[in-house]
Structures are given as C-alpha cells and as structure tokens.
Length: 61
Image 1 (cartoon, one colour):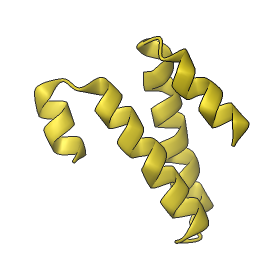
Image 2 (spheres, one colour; image 1 turned 180 degrees about the horizontal axis):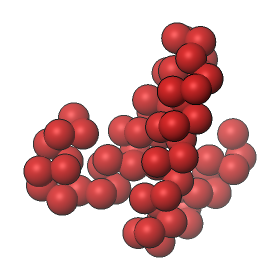
Image 3 (cartoon, one colour; image 1 turned 60 degrees about the vertical axis):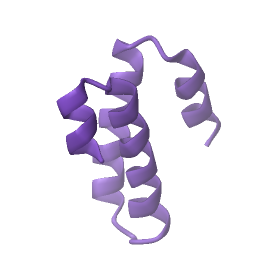
Image 4 (spheres, helix red, strand yellow; image 1 turned 45 degrees about the vertical axis):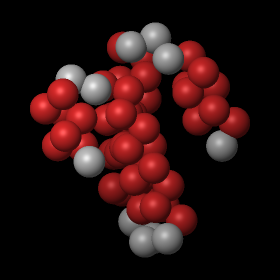
C-alpha cells in the first residue's frame, strides 16, 4: 500500500497507512518501538501537508 502511494505521490495515503500500522504494532503486535516510528512518520507527513484534522485525531488517542 505504501509503495503505491509513494509511486503516485499520495502523501495523505502514506500517512494514513503509517497511522494504521502504528496502531497495529502497538495494540496487536506488542512492538512499541515500531509503533512509535510509524506514528512519528505519520505525524510528520500530516504536519507537512497541513492535515490538522488527522493531527487532532491522533492527539485524542
């Protein structure tokens, strides 16, 4: 999924996938290190693209 989004320049898609990966790593796979890495990457993209809605959702969780 990320490969397709990178190929097509869909930065929002990349950030959403990373956000979902962070949740899976944290809640289902018990890997907080990978969860934090994916989370930080998603936050960076959301900030760069001005997607405040998604940043607010992340803060709520």
